[in-house]
Image (cartoon, rainbow, N blue to C red):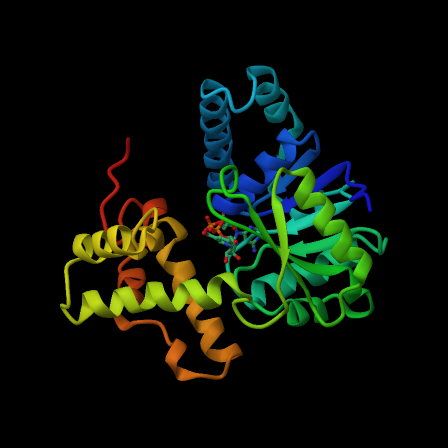
Length: 289
Ligand code: NAD
């Protein structure tokens, strides 16, 4: 089945939205990105320039492909200006209220049922997000990319209870066209990736909080002992510590089990503004280049 996408709308110009916009543009799709914070848009433009030049330098893509991709991406700072899209991927903050509000507005803006409304949520129930679209819930699907999007191969495809088989098949086709490997998981909190990964990251924060080892040792032990490409605390810094807390909250609530509660130290770092790489400091420091 063809995905049938000419113009992709992306909600959120952060780490994930920016990456999704980039891979779709490289695949030849016109992309319109919406973010309500103008600073985010400028940052995203800078990230695209840097990331695409790096890929061209490494001969992963040609300079022509990189330039053409930049030319295919435009930005808007108001949702009502995100017009003319035939597919939307939402990648804003991991907050169910914010996502449902946007999905109900999208359903009204795009009455055509062929316009798929996908969410890049890491953990929130697709079935729940879809309820915000009322009668057109069957076109809502989970399309979960991984960070950094231009490099990571997987897209987890998650049908909600209401999702139509056609929306799932087209999501698989779009992910494949973007150079990714789609794999399906059912709609339970955290799906597969975060249900398995996030409790391990949370446990690493507990180990640090309890003084079992310092962060460098925790990361080093997991890297060298388990052959991970990076340790769990470093990975948390890349994901964003705020996003990690949000995902743990969703697991605790969605799986109805207290063992998924976020570690107090992880929560405390977020309160202190230490979100990870994106804020310049999380577990580790990331001085501005
Ligand atoms: P981020 O903080 O880098 O970006 C979120 C963006 O959304 C920001 O630019 C913010 O300005 C924008 N935003 C927030 N509220 C908005 C609103 N109401 N309208 C429009 N824009 C709004 O976060 P991220 O890491 O890109 O995560 C985005 C989504 O992707 C989350 O649902 C997250 O769980 C999911 N996700 C994250 C990762 C990861 O590793 N970071 C991986 C897979 C999925």
